[in-house]
Length: 94
Image 1 (tube, helix red, strand yellow):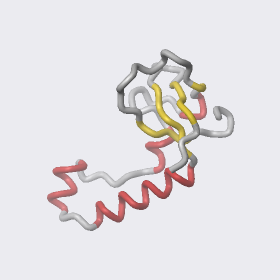
Image 2: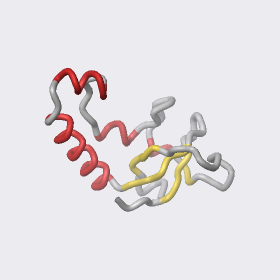
Image 3: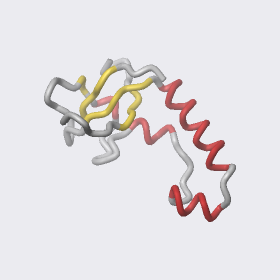
Image 4: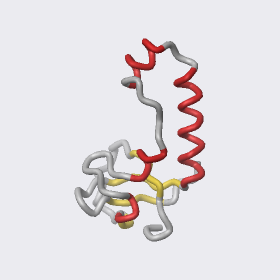
């Protein structure tokens, strides 16, 4: 996976690392194959019975703001040691 930088949600300030839509699609497909290999009980217990979706990579998980509105993150936007989630970095915010 090729990380394209860090991006900040313009609505709530959460920071993400950017990936391409191609990388996000590959991650979704790989997870969904793994998900399908589990029993229904495991699917619900581990993942709430939900498949991965490319749409998850296009919005802030905290407030729902579309990733196309994100801006490049600056030093100090993200505390050291936190876990970042991936977001599709569009050409408008790369």
